[in-house]
Image (cartoon, rainbow, N blue to C red; front, side):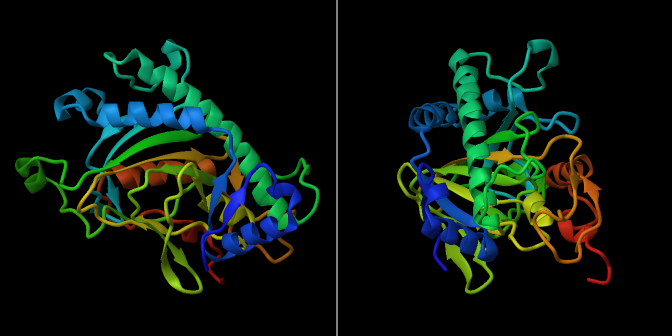
Length: 317
């Protein structure tokens, strides 16, 4: 089962491409997207991302995230209760200063401008991509007002940097959980779908139901699309939230930037009759409840495993 390459400009009118999207979404939840129209925004994004991570650790930690504000820089994130070998910078839709929880670099005024332009372009592409996924799933006219949409007000962007060595000092390493065996342990994304912009280094892998772990190869100019937990719940497990991981970087650092397209703040996650005729596998739960648990899991070591959608499955299933 390969990762299909899909032309966004023509796929919704192409039965063959729609079939490839449908097959991929049922097996591993990944496909590559070309002709998306984001070339300029992507190029500018790579410049500010690499410039930010090239700063000293002291400078980056001026924007350190906290338990009360998950936006900004962080270098001690956990996945599956194991520390990742990566650094991140998270932001949401920029807002007026009085209501903006984003933390922006003070020395680089261009950083916010580029980030905002990238966020807006990615939001539009994510909406179009979700329409493509629905079209592949339903094989009918897409314009069904009952189908849930994403909301850029809850969506986020993350600049990722995967170094070749542990980003923490030796003293900090002795005080934190040890690194995992991977740069980023296996997981699913909680939202609807993710647009991932990755450099050409490689290392991203997806879990195929049919053949196990497979590479998600870099392709110049292409966006990686992977499905999230919310869409798996809405489709009653017919489409698969992509289980993925990142291998350790031994020779070269890796940069990637995911745009997490999330449900509306008040959205309820439950199987939808418009997307499945089978008996519901999940009980209803709220997006706010689910994302809060996932954020807490990433920030601190908890006594239980990361919250998964399996927590909300009916017991008899």
